[in-house]
Length: 321
Image (tube, rainbow, N blue to C red; front, side, top):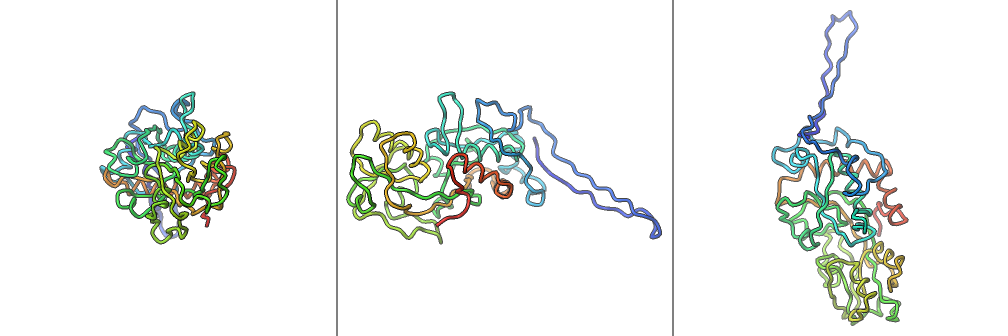
């Protein structure tokens, strides 16, 4: 598809003052050049489809046409948008044994593609590669529960937040730790290049919304490729760290899956999570505008809330903390 552009015809008066007027209005959309089906017809092996209704972003929010050579132009011409995701981060995203991607972020990204009128495909780079920017066109956007931070904004553009999660400390069930103070001087496991690591190191910066909480005295961090692997390491018998910091949703999913995890204390801060776009690639500004319009519509029509309740059991789409 070359573009999605709506034009409204102007009204014309064609009769004399004593006559009635005739009004004509017309719209036209960009012609489709891709032979691929839209996201709503994507094969199940590519991604599970959300059952939420699909509708276009409001015409008033959409640019008249994509920026020539920009990211929206690239996506609409290809008829497909490529999303980076994590195959081991349930309930946000996970590659199942059947070879399908599923989770909250998968549903959100798929719905964005549907409302753009394009297919969706997935790539699975490591988190540190995604957050570093300079994607070289290997994927178009990241719907990966990425927290907006000042350093990341230097290399990435962000949508408005689409949900907010509490950052939750946890411990091994056999550690005897039941409070945050009990983790003083202990080692805490986090995902590499995450805001959880930044918080433990005292460098987390949300700009004007930076958290006011501080880590337990003398705590140190160890990292694995993704958050969930910390809990999996405990199940495999590792005991070289006693704590784990991740989103409350990931911690709860690990508990529900029977991993040796117990939540410790109240959330230490709340994260604004957004869709990310590479500043180092084609100009993403018009796609950011379109995605913001789509997210606003999904919030208004209840789609985002329904997805959150489906995967987390509660509505995390409203700002907390």
